[in-house]
Image 1: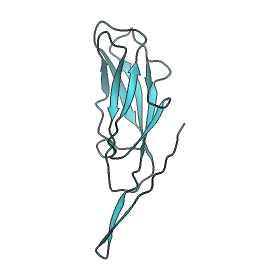
Image 2: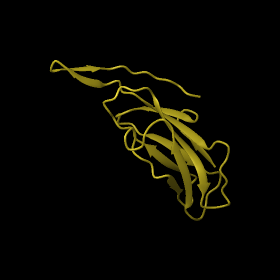
Image 3: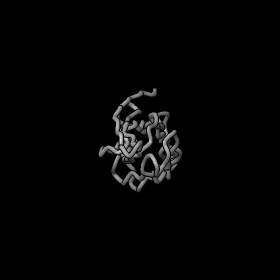
Image 4: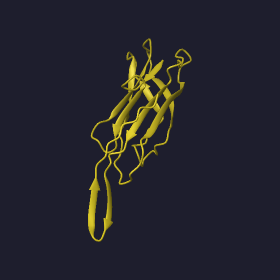
Length: 135
């Protein structure tokens, strides 16, 4: 059983973008019953503030070889550095399926660069997109 994010285990999205990063959980053979895979979510990003919280379990349906974990980044007004969401497979509902070495996917949430401040009644907005790759 492996987990992958687009881009060889690491993917990125920009906060507030319309795109959703799909993290794939794959098995080598199909199951006749639903297979629940539990995962832990860590990283520097904060659930329900930087991204939509994840339930911590994904189900591969009978006859299927994969399931997707969707990650949607929220927009905020903070100017901050790139944050990460790390998804790591922790257990399965079947002893037949063993979690392999490729059990972690990292998603980077890039700052959209939009900050707003008020000075003398004026609103100032700036854009700066920075991409950082973490291996």
